[in-house]
Length: 209
Length: 182
Image (cartoon, rainbow over all chains, first blue to last red; front, side):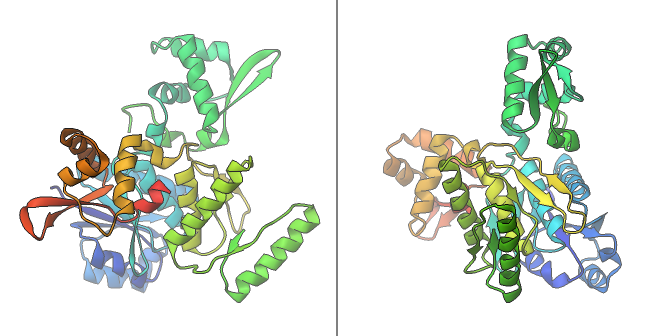
């Protein structure tokens, strides 16, 4: 088995993180922590215990930034072949929610240790995005701005998808709240929703993440 | 609206109910018995979401309020049930939708895998070898071996050495899988 990594959310109080460090075996420790947190005495005390720990500084009140950082950390560990567990019992509510969401997005085992260890029901390797068909993910990649259905079908056609497959993919995206359908001058128009626009990188084309 | 039994939380509940009444919106408050039990809270929220949906309501969840644990439980309920979740920022009041799909997370297992896992969850106090599990569920050993391998790869089950027979492996549901199945 390769190096096991533990990714833990951290605020200022190291006692929120210590139960996870004691209970979850790891070879590599990564802390997702606020920029002020990494200058705090609690962080220094943790570093004294774990000199090899790596901190990923985040703005702990910016959910999107926390989610991006947590997802990037998990993807990086996966690329390096290090199976990661996530502990979400430290840090702000926003940081914990983002790390939990990232764990589900990336199919990484997640725990809440405060202080008793509670394993959260993430399935290993099962990513949220895998709930979308490959065609829908390809179409989502093309859907950057409101566009008529005809134009979208034409643009996607060179990927080998016919009109029927593209329309089915659009319906799938609409069903998941990632696209909206409307009419403009009597023509069907497809619009990406705010979720797709904001989190595009969390819905990558197949084979891109 | 979920809240703890803390005095400040009850006070906030009264204010929210007064506010929503002013808007002509009906609000139901749920006081959580144990605001420190994540799985229990998530299960409660999930059951309420299911009930509302089966009554025809469109549900979305603001997961920003309450403690970190309550917020995490709400997010879990949203992921497991596949409902839209929003984080309304405490300071900026910005509504931040979360990138979830409207698909129940447990459906990522096949019906047969869910059946095997459900059986193991229901019989947590008992131990099963793969053969005993195949017999109990009436499937061929090879078929059960396939399901067990798939569930093992996803971390949904654990295999432990049988203390009475060093060669045999006992299978049990991994912790937390009750919530996956709902």
